[in-house]
Image 1 (cartoon, chains in turn orange, purple):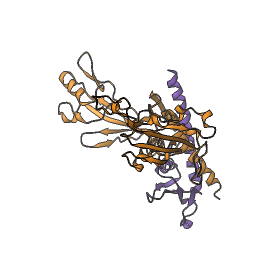
Image 2 (cartoon, chains in turn yellow, orange; image 1 turned 90 degrees about the vertical axis):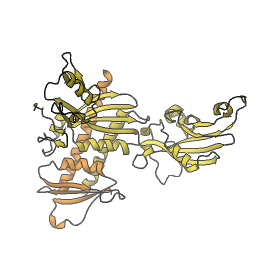
Image 3 (cartoon, helix red, strand yellow; image 1 turned 135 degrees about the vertical axis):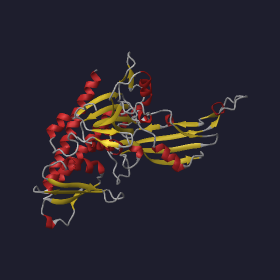
Image 4 (cartoon, helix red, strand yellow; image 1 turned 180 degrees about the horizontal axis):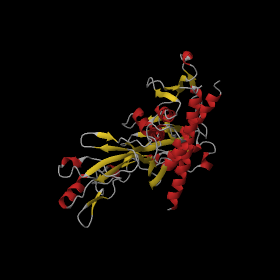
Length: 332
Length: 100
């Protein structure tokens, strides 16, 4: 048995998942903020405007899960909430069309808008965005003789999100550009039509949170998993080494110049327990996960970059604590 | 009011209380429970969402000597500190990543 360093682990054995006997402070230690600060580390692994991968190391699962839940359901974003349909002669039903429009991600930055309260009947420039969609499908003027393709025969036979037109309210035109508030993607297919079909409608987008409706969620996915670890207990050579390599995800096990297997990088291992299928090598590897090392994957829908979504999520939790503290101080 | 006290604890002294949080659930409940359970004086701390259709969270604290209200306040303060530290550290790491 190799010596492990001081990290809480969970072992993936052949027939069970076993917690390590030592918890190293994950369970029953008294709370100490200084100790938490000392242990807690963040590492950014990958980041762009849409996707991000980062590690939270040395944190309680409760906190990691709270951050994930907050990103999914409590960080606000803008989405179409009301659709006024003046005319819809296409084959897609009004309510289905309205639902589809609601799910189109908008580029508008929710931090620049306010929530529209239930009592407000009229939206203001600070809490609503107005869009319209007016498309009519007609026969193409230059009717080709020997083509039966829809794009040759008809005009406007597919409606895309790029057909949506933004109508600034009040001062909005000076503050935002259409590209800053409109749909994130120009090529989202909304409906298909044939000559004679027409869609004419108005849309109102407001700020909301994912708890109310998934369309308000600013993330496509926000997940975490525990860091996988593979430890080899003995030397594995030649044909056994290649067999061992095939038991893990590509890139996890490497084979050196002397044909010996070594653990190259277990981070992206899928944690399948294929090794245990082979009696010759099942004793050679210990599979485990580090219980306080969370690998977060945050994928933004496009309105705000993932690193801001995470910070906003933590801020929401902090503000919750503050408002409850204020209330409790008035308590008695 | 978004927070209130559940009646029925008059006999058990000020150290045992159940608080009802409105519009909260596992996000706050579990992380707060996780901190408060680690306090030395706390005998029991747990939370429940009694019904999924009601957005309420019941939070129970049983301490030995400290009043439950003080324990809850301390928990919220500690959780706030955790959040502040997370934001600062995350911003620092993002800046460092952008530099490289």
